[in-house]
Image (cartoon, rainbow, N blue to C red):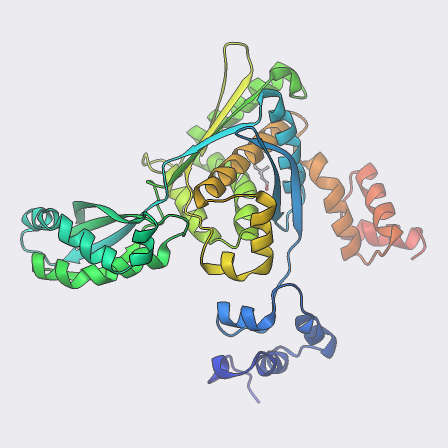
Length: 422
Ligand code: MEV
């Protein structure tokens, strides 16, 4: 029989039944299926409620970065990531940063934006004014959607309206500015935007299509700063200069900026995942903020103070929550929050910003000195040894030989395994 991915009622099946279907489709063995059935911390019924069509859960390593001081407070940083050198990088750079007292952070408050798009408005500039005239009514309608948020001091706070000239004609875009307190706030602001749509249509005579949050959360910024004494940087002043040249390169060139910023996200995303937050939202916000001038630029800034010490800074949107979503459902995410010891979403956001800056410091220091391969290679070599079939002590032996030879390849690992007697 032709195999097909069109499986009617797949979502109505039990996890076990879905797994059977996938087994038949892909020709999985019993051993492979058993791996899906192995249960970790996230129980299958919770997973089955979190997303659709669940057949299992997927584990990624969780490591702890050490040495972090933020605003004078010690933090251990849980990071969920598949890439080697990330956790070690944060730990090393956080250690260097202790020379200047660690990281210092601030934030602009937990403010999200929801967008409401009106098209086919005959008089867009008049319509814009009409919407402004209804500001109080707009805030009232929005806040009626979430009395709980309002009781916590949050809720819709402001309205901003623009006329946008687009290839599909002029549009009137309303921004609803909402304080979402300790929630990431996507559900809250989307509900408000949807509730406002009929009134906005009525006032403007246009047609509302989109009612959705903006991931360019540029009213929800975190800021982080670090000073690293030049003596604590291996390689001293020359490496300080190299770091500043590396930053200037990224800031001037989008090809380099993409990699530079990827390194920053190497710090940010593993912590976002560990806390059960939406990492796609953070990626979208960070990259769009980095392009806000019209050119894609560095998310960080590096300079020297009057004594030649290195000073780094970062400013990014950080739409993270402590309540709701996977943060509330995933048992490990709750424990991660306890390890971090954070009480508010803004404090969590600031830590994440500091970790991003810290990871950037780690990457730029290595790039400005010995390069990143040296650090990468020993862990990478172990993975290659495992891929070649090494087990137990042989993993380390094969990896070490490959690092010494500078040949880290599966074929060489296989040869070494034969040589070493497996
Ligand atoms: C690797 O995952 C990240 C780096 O490429 C970042 C950078 O180049 O700045 C090392």
